[in-house]
Length: 224
Image (tube, rainbow, N blue to C red; front, side):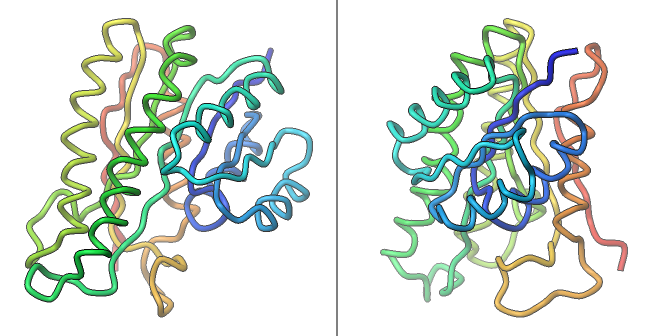
């Protein structure tokens, strides 16, 4: 059976890197996009011939278009895309928030995700493919003044809208929404919380669902 191919943004560390490992272990090919070329190269060395490093900035639409073309040329198709790249803020809340930080936040968490979707859909629409978006528990509750949380509310709302659009041609869209995950996203370790591998497991659960199973959202929280 021919292997399927998954495009991952924010792939150099954390959830993206863990998903790349889980996908390759599950027989998928992967294309890994992030700004850190050296880190991607190291990850590809670990993953082997099933992985392709695609260094670039997710906020650059043309860079994503080029990355997906390179991935398709390498493996023959792109069956799924994981819009995972994102960032938080150092100045939380509305009154104390920083305007320049908000610009970067919205450019990456919203516009970067939209650019991944737009760049990937021409491939996915040819094979009833699958789009996965990284949401968050912060996109399901109201947090005091949280602009970051609002960007994740956008992801959840848009994910439902995109699922309806993709359904028209047999595609699927899943929002994977974790609670706190112990990754470098935080300045300090978060023991007892979810690990990146837990989120990767959820992504693969959605991607490997039966053809009749349209998994729209997976919401996972640490038990502790």
